[in-house]
Image 1: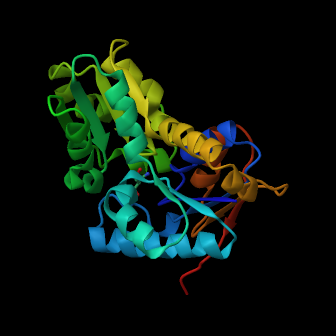
Image 2 (image 1 turned 120 degrees about the horizontal axis):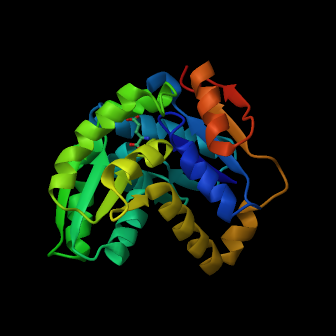
Length: 263
Ligand code: DGL
């Protein structure tokens, strides 16, 4: 089974993308809704939560972990790789690979939470791969609560998206990274705002494709991960808005099981 965690339901965009490309591998999902958002917390706190989430998923039988949260990926992936003996995937490196293969003018916009943007990880990784590229970053702290609230098409959301993206448009970017797993839910709005000429990179799809390639190269692990049981979805809090968002992402009802693994 593939274990996937996020601070909330946004990481389900990754779970959905993984399910599409690896339908024979059941997923155990954990959304830490009781402690969301992660993006405005300190690295120490995000690392602590990420460690606990990983332990929970491993206790449920996960053999591979995907950190479906850019904020946690940016500060906790190295720690988790040192501490746990299973493959740990994160969402940033696959998105950067896609950026490097996509951009023509080398002018990249990155949007994410405060934690992700402050970590500067996209800028550093993109510059490692292409030193001449220019990266323009914008933290968008209001978008995660709007998505968690299900305000995907509200007028207020459109205004906030416009406000965040305007500075990036002025920089003449040709590629925009959705550096938060909640943002694919706003991708129509975002695509409309940046215009057709800007390619939008969805880190959820990028990690799903890299996982698929990894499993093709590691057939023993792929066999170990596949089994005939249904995926399960856990959360440290369950709200009506979360249930509705999960349904929107998967296009079917998702049974969100409430657990409190930290007491
Ligand atoms: N979905 C998470 C991410 O990709 C962020 C949500 C949060 O701030 O908790 O960064």
